[in-house]
Length: 214
Ligand SMILES: NC(=O)c1ccc[n+]([C@@H]2O[C@H](COP(=O)([O-])OP(=O)(O)OC[C@H]3O[C@@H](n4cnc5c(N)ncnc54)[C@H](OP(=O)(O)O)[C@@H]3O)[C@@H](O)[C@H]2O)c1
Image (tube, rainbow, N blue to C red; front, side):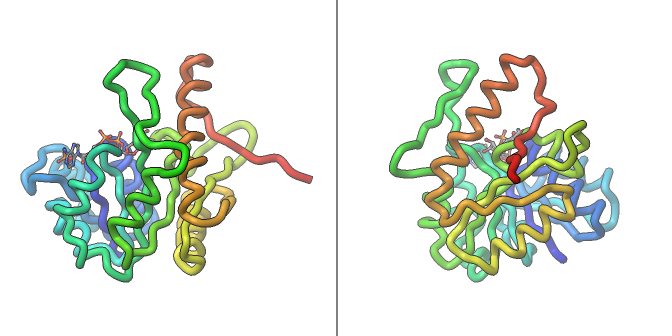
């Protein structure tokens, strides 16, 4: 499968590396086609990896990943070109964090709206699924933890898209818990803050959520 990734940060590269390891073909996109981080990543990953602009990555992907700074989502999507997302599954990994006041950051959007809903409103013809936003990039692919595979919480308005993303998450080594429509991003983005605050107090980023049931 061709995977287009908008974002050259730790998340974009970690997910890209995971997709490559699973045999997919990945194009990672930046604002500038000559982004050094993206070019170096593609060189290191070999023939199934390439780099380009946000537009190149969105056009390339049969499935597209949004892994940009939360406050930059709208700008990155505009650069990607709405027509390049039409009819596609878009995995939104982002959090609307504002770190201008230092750490911990605060949620710049919360309550009756969320970053995930904004992305879906910007791209009404894409099928947005919120996922990967409640764990650090180091554990996104095949997390190994003493308590067994952790759970990824997802949400979105499109059931078939969520089924596709759940299959990807299983390949990435996760249990999957679907919370419902894209408005549940309000809670998943707040959950990112639970992850950050508990990590800061425990002084480790090596942690993930698991829901225990019987
Ligand atoms: N870091 C984590 O472990 C983690 C975990 C879960 C979720 N998240 C969320 O995932 C997203 C990506 O995080 P990250 O740490 O990988 O990277 P990041 O530093 O938050 O974002 C890097 C990406 O944002 C783009 N960007 C920055 N300013 C921009 C602007 N004004 N216009 C357009 N694009 C802009 C950069 O473009 P260029 O490539 O052109 O520089 C780059 O591709 C964030 O929303 C974050 O909250 C992060």
